[in-house]
Image: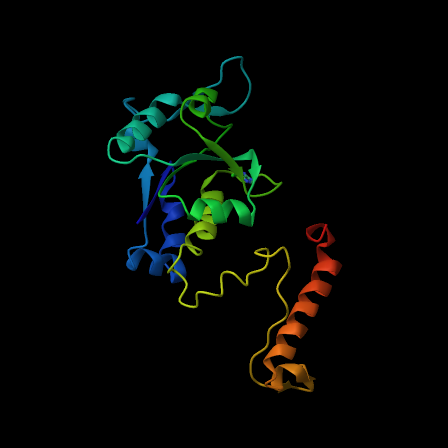
Length: 225
Ligand code: 6GU
């Protein structure tokens, strides 16, 4: 069973994303154990502070090393992590390949930062991988952590009931997905392509591939090069 631990100052932000649908099923099936830890519980400060003014001056608070060190070292007493991941806009951009690789690991620890960032020494002493989910800035790492965990958990073997469906996702083969249809075959004169109603599986597969290729050329030519 895979263990994913997440350290955050906003545990409430991470309740719903893992409580439904595929994320919920993966946990019920015992394929992954996701735990959210409140960083504030590891502050030894009398006001439970987890941040402080930055050395050198400047606006914005920086998250302190001690609460992170206390929490990480507490968790490491029971679990050895394959990766300790810091979610940060200056990390490597998340790709399907990264999610694929991480889905094969046993234990992951995710650190969510806030404010102006976290003390650099946390990154140097504990973090083994830094991930961004795209070139824009979020107010904290929590939503990025939810995105990363979702991308990993859904492809853990046994999570999806239709085993082939994760492999046919957009990006798994560097192609965007072809269009899909369901009933009715005719909605106000807008018809489903005849080929899909033909029952000719090889022809349907060929059509889907051509559609995927054309769609990728039009929207994401960078994926084809
Ligand atoms: Cl991982 N964190 C924050 N704060 N902003 C982001 C991000 C992460 N990835 C993209 N933007």
